[in-house]
Length: 159
Length: 145
Length: 201
Image 1 (tube, rainbow over the protein chains, first blue to last red):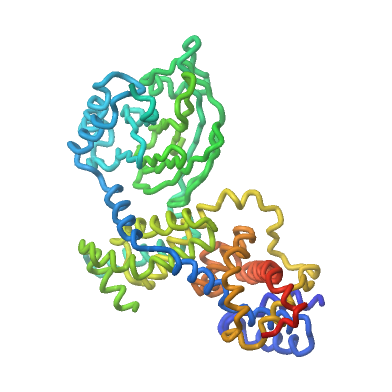
Image 2 (image 1 turned 60 degrees about the vertical axis):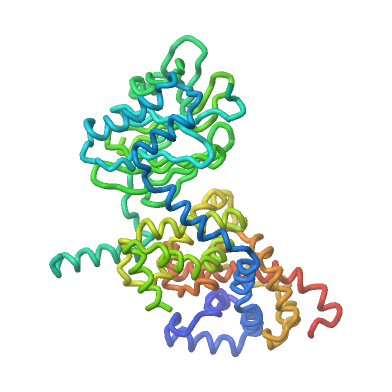
């Protein structure tokens, strides 16, 4: 029985996964151990079931929207041109947590100014300051100490 | 590209692809959960003195530190943290280039995912709960503290 | 398939969106299946598998073809899936990889091989068990689900599992043993009643 703790985990291994000595020792052990032979039989009987079950679950699902969803995520992750981001900020931020109606414009301008003139200006790629949301608008306030990101309120709280 | 440079680049790419268990870029971070309130006398927790200037841009007048954690973040591995409202935040280092790091902050409950790049010495301040009764919680992320 | 993948990757790198979409369509179900096995939840599996392709797209330029594209893709997918269930791992107190004599006892799993018989491919019970497998898999702790899925669906060797999970080969073997034992016990609950009715097909 004590030997079984060594050999039983070896059952189910593939050809090159055990050394020749291990494989031979396992064969000898199995000849004399009904418990381990039973385990080997159980493994053989259920071989491939996990794979079969999960692939069947995948086959049942409707994947027609999957690739479009992937492409949409990829597009969403790309940087928007500055003007598009500015238009989005102005359209989606009717109420701001901080500042007045000009805050998104100021924030957007701050983004530009920060990227162009602030520390780390060599990071000219506007994607470095990208914040994107799916369904919830945010406000970004840039500072030399780092960005502040605010979550907008629910739409139903808008006046 | 010379053959030697190509071989070096190939070896580097191979190492990156075939050894996911190794930390590609461990970035030490300090993460604090802080509470901002519009009410009460203006006051900034002494533990947040380094953030005073940055937080001063917001309308909240009273700031307290709720919790703090320091750990190493491994490239592309998301770290989940529990927030005061019981939800979770996912933090992921997306890219490290010299002294700059791009961090992804994901808040599933708020339907928000932010991708922000900061330099050493800068901090991200990110709202993580909606404001209720004039109070909101934020998380600050400071790389190489 | 592999050569065809490389051709599509080459075109995708050059900006051919239809080539990338072809790769997505080719592997979407299997990536989803792997994710589902690990995260259990169908919506999360969908999300994780989509994100895997997004990450692949983002890093396409870094793929040099030293490994198969599918290997790279599944590595990213399982990485994301394992991260997604990282929270659950903290609560597991009984995930012991060591193997003790007490672990060898037959907890009723012997019923399975009796019921399934010697020719699994023609056994109606096997089809039914496959249907129960998803539920049975979901009852396992995360680290056991992960290793079973990686072994059986992705077909990783002990060495590959050790590298992917950051553990020793010996731990791979004992963890697989524990995972299979728990799986067998979970499935035997479905096979049990049949034996009393004279079980074999």
